[in-house]
Amino acid sequence: MIYLLLFLFLVALDQATKLAVASYFPLYSTTNIIDDFLRLTHVKNPGAAFSLSFGNREVMLVVTIVVIALLAYLIIRGTIRPKSLTGKIALVMIFGGAVGNLIDRIRMEEVTDFIDMGIGVHRWPVYNLADTYVTIGMIILFLIYSLNKE
Image (tube, rainbow, N blue to C red; front, side):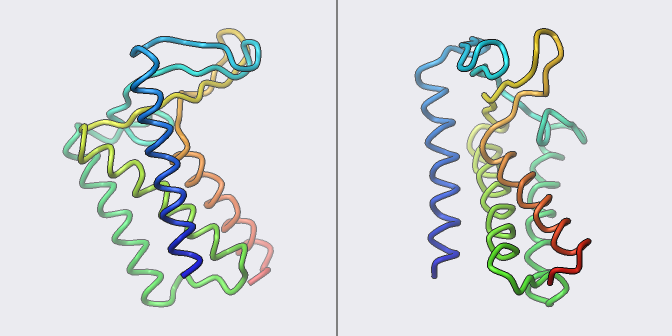
């Protein structure tokens, strides 16, 4: 039950931040948060996390659904079944991020991104909280399994 609540919280927070950005910041506007290092930049992303693209919008929607379904299948089958609390939270983060971006793809055919980090012209692609959840969750799982902590 706690994992379901965490999942719902992560998805709700992701959607709330995207809605706030879309409501209060014009598309392509930029606002410095921490000097030039961290900015809020409102963009729309038809591609995958960090603006990667594997095809058109329909392909991206299908890829997202297939990845979520495959991950669910591997968990149900027992191939991926972390025993630690950290590993379970990492899986919830991955699902929360994937579903957060899937909601955008279904609702708007693209994802709202707004976290803009870098120095001057050297910038990371603009991303959102859902991308952060997936990335951190994957890093945690990678470390757990590569260090044989499960």
